[in-house]
Image (cartoon, rainbow, N blue to C red):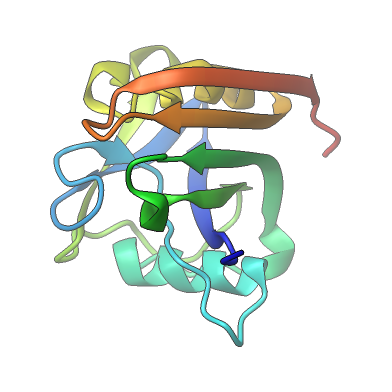
Amino acid sequence: MEKVRQVTLCLLVKNNHVLLGMKKTGFGNGRYNGFGGKKKDEETIPQAAVRELKEECGILAEEQHIYKVGELDFQFPKKPEWNQVMHVYFVKQWTGEPKETEEMRPEWFAHEDVPYDKMWEADAHWLPFVLAGHYVKGSYVYSEEQKLLEKDLQCSPLDE
């Protein structure tokens, strides 16, 4: 059996706001998302999170300043090459200002104004819990047309 792709997602949080990026190219194009991507073979998952954050919006963070807040399994039965386990991190301390890159256009949103209608459908299921201070573990199944077919989520209080 093929190893499932490990990916990261970083959410910068400050003053009841979260930084999201409008994806401009590739997988997820046209949707808001956090900042992240695929782990390289030689990297740890936190190293990948820090690298992807810098590549996608120019923010410098250190591993000790990212906090794991979730692990989500995404399945695409008709597109198994898209299957992935996503490791979700909060970033509460960083250097630099978010900047637009070829891949992403960053934008701050108040927690109550997160544009769930312009995000992956599953995000509306798990992200509110993370923003409210919970650790999430979930699984989601999408159709070939990227419509959510199944969802399962467990939440527990976040220890910071």
